[in-house]
Length: 257
Ligand SMILES: [Mn+2]
Image 1: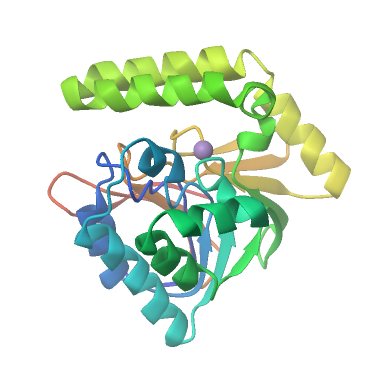
Image 2: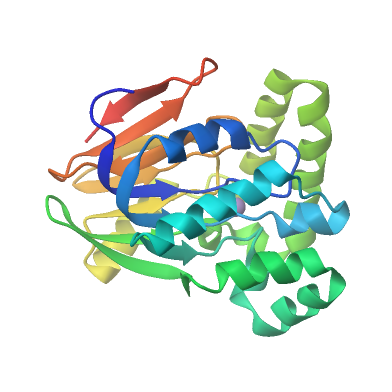
């Protein structure tokens, strides 16, 4: 543990529960050792795409949802901001269709329905002002225009992660590069902030954890729980930190804002 373990807010994305590459044990360690008033789930928490290809739902993955539920019962505010892999949560008819397929889906979705759901959330930080929270796939032209290509990239990645981790990391970056192209992401962040009068953006999606400043705009990416095992936290004094659970299950601070 780095310092104290009481946070105002914690931001998690790309957990990919339901995918066998998810490092749920490390996340469990973080969750049971920290307290927080607000929990922001920034998309791709459940990997419905992977579960559709091959149904997978071990107890350890259910346990993560149970921890979220008990934190909620104890008074933590939980905001679920949907991503592309949990897109049934964006579409009622898709959600109803999926619930008919397996009772486990019913159980999972029933639990998630307790939380507040949205695709974009306005977050106010005492120290830095207004932030836009969204998953990030909204900026990924190919994901919305041709879901199959992005899905293919995902499948390729899922297959490779089992064979070779460093290689899969390289390929993930490569497929993301093809998918998102040189989209001028920083320009996009700036435009989005100017449009909505935000100080910055908090997202996930590309599995690259970072805290960046572009001109006066702040960009924070929570990373993922497949490879980086990282989260963004807001301290009680308003400081933001990027934290990471390492191979020894120790929690370290990577960068601070
Ligand atoms: Mn995503």
